[in-house]
Image 1 (cartoon, rainbow, N blue to C red):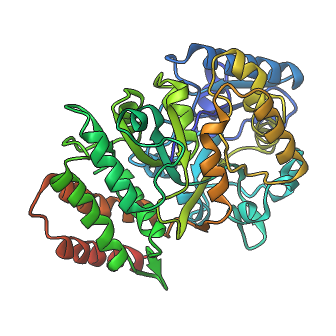
Image 2: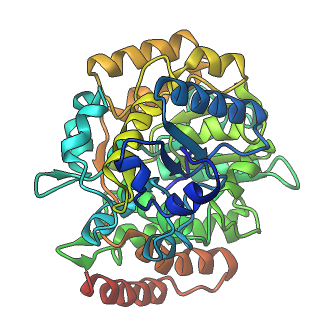
Image 3: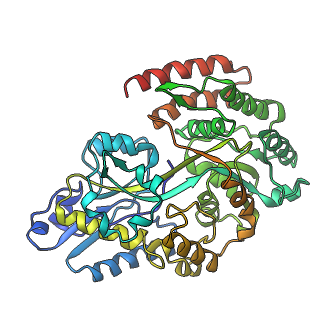
Length: 444
């Protein structure tokens, strides 16, 4: 569900009008210039990253004469409030990013192009882990190129741990330990938050799912909601108690995905759930101090939510546009030493190179090369992430549930309630959420 910077695209006049929705271009099929669009150009607030992107676009166009690209400037890249409407209205770019949460829905509605015959244009496609490729495959047909694969852990502020008398090299392993540590951090004084959590924007429900999985619970079983369970109750009860008994979560209900990362970067929040790229964003986008942040395994460690992102192509794209789009995906997102994998350039630009991403390439030849290059050019203290690396291999992985975004929106209500009402009825909140979730799932 998380946003990611990516993008391609178009140029001028009528060509822009013809392709803004990924539509066919007569000139492209006739051998003339072809124009494509891709979302998620880096923000103007990150000028070096944006320039690197623009440089890549220029290099790509030079290597592919006749292809014109224009990046659409949209941040955050994925907005669950507008994504479905944009797709349904035919307004999606030629190449667009889709979180794993939405793979099945986009494919089922035929809103992504079948690219089975073009996967060879992404030279390292075969090095992508099979289980990751399976997520964008249906009935033997491929509908996307995976770009990210991750599992969730616990991101924490090592400096605050030290200040609160906690050992930053021995982060919490259980939810009980998280609660105890959060209470100590909040005890540092006004404005300190021990553990940050969301109450809306679908990210509240998303974190609910992560917490349920970590305790050994489930979200959906045999097409029915399964979170009204001891594990689900434990999630809400623990959060309620941290908010009202320990006063360690802060009093502000956070909504958007980036709000908690901004709070972490400000240096007064001790812990949050997140994948390794949270560290990247906290340091790179929100100017947190690199040495302050570490990541460890998910508390309790029964299981961790796994997720990711893929690039899909608008079904209206012409054959020439599809070819150009696949070549761009290969160039910018799948080649060691180039595009987003130009770690040397990233380090020189002040990017937060070095987080231990659970790479979608796994231990393939490409995956090993990427891991070596990342470590060689690390700008971050890689030792701070060893607890995560050590624990990740022993944690079972769970995919996001079907109709995930809709279920997350339902569970936002329960998460918000325990953060805003001391007398919140947890059993009723779960029962109401279960009923609404089953209505949603029944329509699948």
